Image (tube, rainbow, N blue to C red):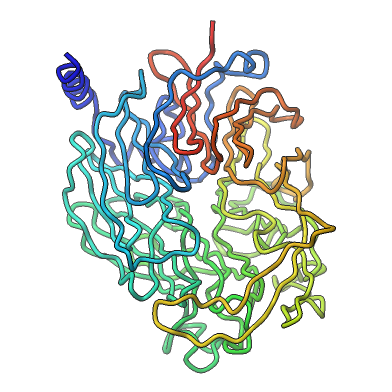
Length: 528
């Protein structure tokens, strides 16, 4: 009976699942029943208009089901939800299709990670992309795989780069037209970063944009000698897309090595930057470098969120980011011009951003052999955790680590595929870092409210039409805040570290909120 029951569920799911079209992805924001891409929509809002769960009843939220993945490691997935199924990825090259009613596993996909594949931060994965009946995910050893959503069988696999040279892949891909767009990790191993686009049907690479300018590239003069060859600039968090402008926006990471800038004189383009590239060709339209010649590991890989803001009484097409360097930025997404730049946490390395867009540096903030205090710490400000924008409140929400660290500098020789950071950081015992959820007015950078967390943040956020902001923390709680005031309204102990962002959707007329906690996937709905 058990075998027949499993087969019947799988068959039912296969019949129910419909293909995802380009039009579906463009209209993803209007379909509240699904969650079709990493940021909910191409603008990266992570906002759902669903309001069945709201401030007045969120205390009745309780688990509907829990799925144990059986896989240890950091679970950072954003689920894809479509036609009665949930598709999730896990650490160490695992993935699952789950039944939305019960959380029962429909299929499981797995692949051993080669022993020689090394990464800075665990064998993590942040989710699928979907087009047609095909799911796309990256494998840790730097490959892209296409999987049949109905059966869980591999359709094709393409090698992105050589993991023996320090490259790894952890990003959730982004579907743009008929292409799979993705980034790469490996800056801490001296890998030269890039942004790639692949044909969704064949897996053939369409274009590549190198995020570290080499000989003959604009910006090559910003690297001394041959330091560009091991320049970093990873692209490990999913970007966004403006179909009207035909531009892809993607953040880039730190230069290599992280803390020793003497071996890479210059601004080190295009590290710690936001790049806007033509979707069809991968050609650079514009860039903005948040932290020239970064010495503090302040990746600019936070999700770039697209919205219209008001400046001087006019609506401006903007792209916003809470940067790891401690400043909030709003840029004109057509030109890359800085519209707003304002600190949202303690910042000691710069006293503002000049009219030319460059930071006004404060002397004495560089790493030293003895250790030098600077703020924010290595994790930010805001790090990679997913942000959200609510058109209902007109607020932008993100998490922040508020505090300072000692930054050390040493010399390190580059060895192919080996750790290449040139020292590290240390916390300050008498000044422990704190964490917060920040609600900010995008047009001005003014903070509307701040909610204190129990330590530095770990998880991403979700906002809803019910006037709520959902998130999670390092103590294992998933929680809901009032989106207008930041008041805590509900929390639930998942039993494991919460690193992933939540999603929401409807199934059989009921709204659910789902999130990964520890090695589990949990789905919540209102109790009677």
